[in-house]
Length: 81
Image 1 (cartoon, rainbow, N blue to C red):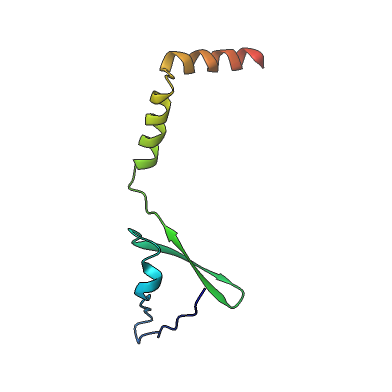
Image 2 (image 1 turned 135 degrees about the vertical axis):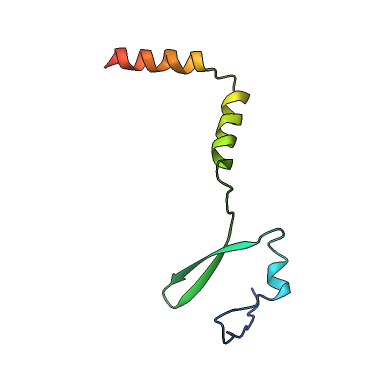
């Protein structure tokens, strides 16, 4: 991995080199963390409110799980106690 140098601006901003950014197409946000004396950037995905819940609902639907199946599973689990 080649070293790149960036300058901290008067507004505490850094510009990432194009040669680095091209490895993360479509990434608009990065998570930043400190690791000892290093700064680590990781691509981050900011989810729109409700988006994760919709993905879960879609997955449940694709598996053919219905409300009746869930209700029966809950009843069965409660009886097992």
